[in-house]
Image (cartoon, rainbow over all chains, first blue to last red; front, side):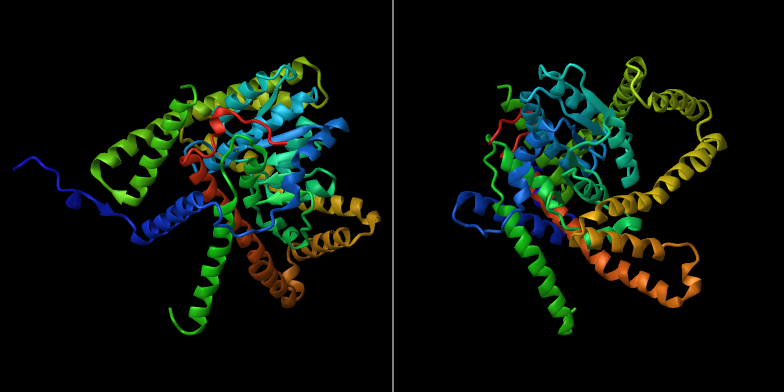
Length: 246
Length: 207
């Protein structure tokens, strides 16, 4: 016994496919970051560039700004969404308070609520910060709309993990917003009538901080690459299946 | 230093958890388990913090005589009752009764109201006479008709149309949306892990 540790015997790969996918994405991420010219230019939603203007317009019209962050607790997949929300929380609090107002915040996690309260209290304009804990699973779009009305009769701009339906309905009643996504079956049909001019769902939720944070070195390039690569992989898989390769 | 320590902690914790998810190494698994244990404890405190926040929010509503403060009274009365039932009779039929006969019907009622919210919005938009408003109104109407209880017994064709709509166009839209969100989440995770994005250290405006 020489006391050395046999690494090979102690290291077991849990899922080779998963590891390969992770390594590919990591390689892509590093190579894209190291070579600035490697880019696929996908046009982002114009609404992403309009966020500051939308916030200003809402404030000037005397309406509220609502952030609806962290719809899942810590330790779940929702934490990435909550982390992106923190960026927006900081940005919006700063911008809204510059105009003498204070945004309202809803969240489904106690610690996120405490962080939000701290962020709001840091601004001199937020004398009465409105942070509402909504419980761990405010799933229904109707519940979201009811919660909006509890905070303010007609919020003018919202950002958060609200369901797609409430964001769609929100933009139709002139409440532009960004939502992370997630939907429920009864109103899934509304997606077919979606004409999102003043609403963003899905990936846009995670992209918003990139367009707003001056300190961020992040770029949307990896996102653009994955947006092209992953659907392409699906199409190739479909073609292979059609050709009889399983 | 104020930034370095949180960034280092976030990056190290993230890498340990991801590595444990991909490969099985005993010491790594122990470290990841400890971190996850910490997260579970933190999540427990999060719930307590959340309840305190909810109580404070609703107390403020009552104190400030805001409109609709009766809703706050309902929360302040029902919350301790539910907690009392849950803690005094854990696992008993009483708590199940509360869930089955109070929570579930309320959630179902909210769900049922959903389409009416949509129709109200659609009707309010109709006077605009633009294409989007008409499409929204038409889709609300179609989906409301398709969801009438027992409509399938009128004609099997209606059930077939409903199934087709949900299986193909709606299903495809929803999957596309979820795929987009998943890509966004993967990229956001990598940005946070590589400290390109530091949501815990504040933000400054670009515009």
